[in-house]
Amino acid sequence: MSTNLRRIGEKARKESELVFTSLFHHVTDVDNLRACYDALPGDRAVGGDGVTKEEYGKNIEENLQDLSGRLRRRGYRPQPRRRSYIPKPGSEKGRPLGISCFEDKIVELAVKRVLEPIYETVFEDSSYGYRPGRNQHTCLDALGRTMQQERVSYVVEADIKSFFDEVNHEWMVKFLQHRIGDPRVIRLIRRMLKGGILEDGLVRATEAGTPQGSILSPLLSNIYLHYALDLWFSHRVRKQCRGEAYFFRFADDFLACFQYRDDAEAFRQQLSERLNGFGLRLAAEKTRCIEFGRFARDSAYKRGEKPKEFTFLGFTHYCGKTKKGHFKVKRRTSRKKLGQSLRKLADWARKARNVLRKGEMLRQAKVRIAGHLNYYAITDNSEQCNKYVFYATRLVFKWINRKSQRKAYTWAEFNHALAWVGWPEPRVRKVLSPYRRA
Image (cartoon, rainbow, N blue to C red; front, side, top):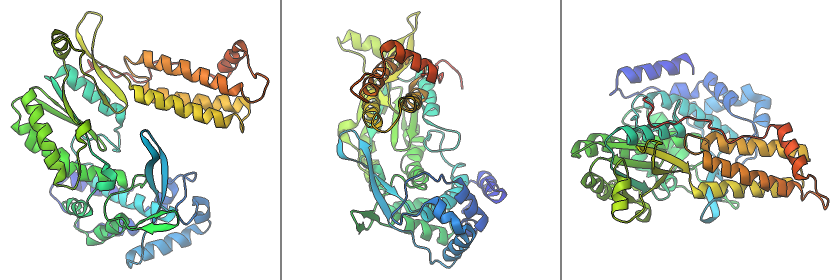
């Protein structure tokens, strides 16, 4: 981060109510644009114009000077984002992404680099998604320790329907204007939001939403939900509660923990109205209040029921016990995510056997399996990780042996090859003990 941008963050931290009225020159600064060009990877999907980083970089100084000039004289207009889809469970078409052209990615990153230091000083501690120094494990760690160490007896799960498609542009601008008083920056963000979508050769106007896949979209979504949810919970909901209350949000995934049932039910009932006020919709079928905590297990057994569980960030959370019989929050890979990972690996292996040599196929499979374990191999999840490695290894064995009519490996030879590539072991990679103090 440049010295000027660091100073912006320091000023925002010292003056929490300050509205920044002169920021646009940081966005148009050629050095900032050059730094953004250098930071962008060159192997990502291209936008509608088909221009890659390599092609854009052939006349980099000329291109950046021209881009800076168009930004300053307000002649820059983002191109429509190319619509692409990635697999999504329960959807035949998939999850929609908006792929910006390379030059637009530079501008998006330049705006993000200017805004992020300002908003990092005001975001609530309950927000974990797409923020420097925070990730899913950070959120899971804080959630587990809170449920273990604080007075938590009820959890409210909730889901926002198609959040990234429903973001209201007018509310987005109003939220930005709390801290951003430079009309040129606001105008540029408006143009980005309304840049349009290119799909099947046709351009469709965007009247709402901030497309997934955009560099700026995660920051804008955090700003939107900061004002729509985070502040509401910390300044209104928590103060009205009879007991303790805690909130955790990662992007548009969130849940709340409460000491008393009436506080949890009141929050659940008010949530829909709160979201509706900002153009968002609550998925009622995915919203529920469950008993969860140190007394939930015994309480459920007394009623002849199983203790309730909930899923958050790919993990199923359940009420477990220590070896001494004390309550402990435990987590395992959700059945849905485990199945998705194995199906994705099987689809890849089925295609890779036709184009990759055996050694390269094993090396790439190793990277994919290690990626799964890097996220899911946490405290108390060894059983599910062992299960994943067991089935993943057999999937690779099955498809590598279908490269031809002759078997490529016997099991003994295959195990020798696995040792040669350093096949991943299902050991704990991230210690998330709910007893550990922050």
